[in-house]
Structure formats: structure tokens, C-alpha cells
Image 1 (spheres, one colour):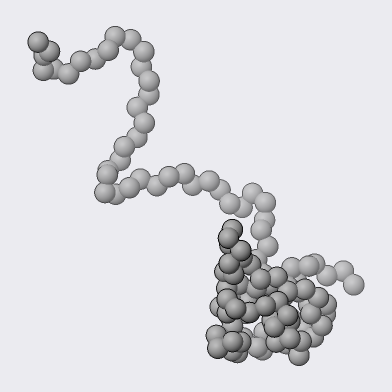
Image 2 (cartoon, rainbow, N blue to C red; image 1 turned 90 degrees about the horizontal axis):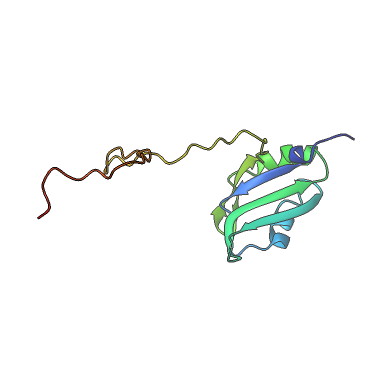
Amino acid sequence: MDVELSELMKAFHHVDYACTPEEVQQHFQSCGTVNRVTILTDKFGQPKGFAYVEFVEVDAIQNALLLNELELHGRQLKVAAKRTNVPGMKQFLGRRPNPYFGFRGRRPFMPGAPVFPPYGYG
């Protein structure tokens, strides 16, 4: 069976911060065999409220879509497709000009004699 991994995974939003991977796995066990549950965390180890569930069968994905907006720990889960990052799709946009400070572009460095303001010194 030649199926991409992204086709077997679904993303779930609004996952309760107190949920464990085992509880998420039990919740989606009725859809089909769950291979792996990943709950995303920030750099401090705190849950972000997102989880990825990887199923063994492709049919389990359709069953998981039926569980959209069902509650787990008192929060409605949102089911979405797992996004696949495509290399080269994100382009660097640079800094946007701040409308409060106006446009402040860089001036090129011009070697030579220093330019003094028109009001005199001394």
C-alpha cells in the first residue's frame, strides 16, 4: 500500500491543554487504528492546543472527519488536514515599513568630506 504519511494524518485544533496523548488516542480509537498521537508544545514544554493523529488505515481519516466539533475535556475539537510544507514556498518578505514612522530607507554610504549643517559652529 503506497500512501503518503500526510494522507494518514489529521490535525486537531482546540485540544485541551490538560489532554494526554493516551486520552486523544482513546477518543479517536472508534475511527480506526491509531498509530501515533503528537501533541505540539512550545519551547517551555507547554501544550499549544494542537494535536496530530496518525491512523493506520485511510478509511479512519473519513471517520475522524465525522468527529469534527465533538467535545473532548469540554472543548470542541476542530478537524483539519495536516499541512505539508513545500520547500521554497515561503519567501522572505523583509520588514514592512511602519506607517507611524514614515518611510526610512537606508542611505548609501558616500565617502568624502563630511557635510556640515548650514548653521555655523563658533
